[in-house]
Image (cartoon, rainbow, N blue to C red; front, side):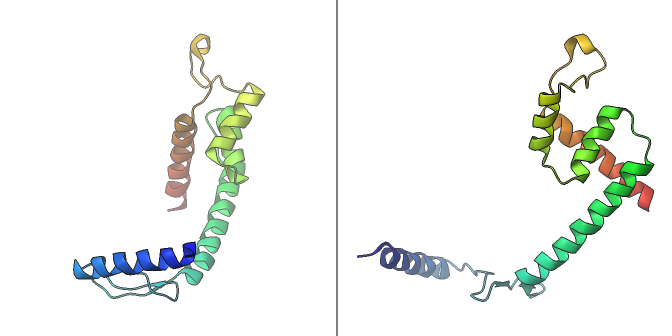
Length: 135
């Protein structure tokens, strides 16, 4: 018996158990979502287009913010610039570690390499400032 046949058998057993328990799957066979209190349908092809447009607008605004905003330090500006380029937070931390740009704390004797959490909080802080400036 092939793995595909075993998978289909097991899938049928579990879908039967789920149906008997009252579970209603909101995923349909045509890559849509349905159900919920409003009975809406959600097409993944639409969201990927919408998501791409939203990301494009966000990064455009973030780039404008980079050129116009007076950041607290050059390090903060560099972190935001890496963010605007689309780098992940982990990639930003890796770059900062490799460059030795990690005197993030005021007390440089106890300066630590920036953590993912530190960089995330910094980006989130400037994201909120950017959003407030847009409103």
